[in-house]
Each structure stands twice: as structure tokens, then as C-alpha cells.
Length: 162
Image (cartoon, rainbow, N blue to C red):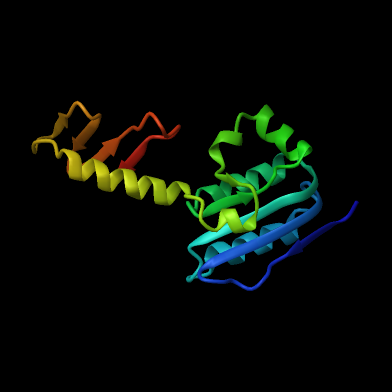
């Protein structure tokens, strides 16, 4: 099966990338180009990757998805097909990706970046540690040489702000 990448017009700062077919190291370049364009676009605050029609995906596509996830704006529109789901399960990466039931639901799903911003705001409003080189509060917040560091039990990754 071939592959196809469509990029509909952005609406309200949401970039949608629709992928269909097989994606591996040799056939990933159109998707890579579409993802790069969306990530570099100044007005795009959310990138929706519609994966419902992906027939095959290997580690190259997973790597691209991880790169896009690091932008803090990626949301997958599913349901995630079985072959892509298997790659995500084997690598234990499924929980990292915010996934919605479809494109419309993905428009309102919280991204990692928005969740981190919300948690930082709540944390800073709840309790601010005393000034020192290293102070710890019961909430798990540390002030280290002028930068905040906080690890949340709801987030698999440490959250840092310097």
C-alpha cells in the first residue's frame, strides 16, 4: 500500500496532518516535511496528527512522532490503528501521546505543554519555597539557584523551569 499525507488549511491556529498508508524510513519524507512545516509555522498552537488510516508504521515514524511531541503541541487523532498501536505498546510510548477519538475531539484535548503550564501556575500559586540555594516544600517544589524544578506524579517526565 502506498502512502498519502494531506495538510488541510489551518483553522484557529490548529494544524491538521492526515496520514494514510505505510510509513517507514524510506517513505517518511512527505510526512516529515508536513510535520516540519507545521512545527515551524508561527501561528500554529496545536498540531493534530490524524493516524486513523495508517496501515503500517515502524520506529522511523515513532521517532518523528516523538520529535513532534517535544514541541508540546502534538495531539493524535485516533483511534490508533493496530499496527501503530503495537509499535507504541512495544516501546511503552502510548501513554506519552495525548490521543483523542477524532479530529474534532483533538482540537480541545489538552496537550503536554498546556498541562505543564497549568501545573506550573497552580504550583506557583499554592506555595512558593523560601529563597535559598536549595529549598524544598512538601509539594515537591525545589528552588535551585533561581530556577524552579518540580516533578509531578501525573507526569512521566520531570518538569523544569530555569
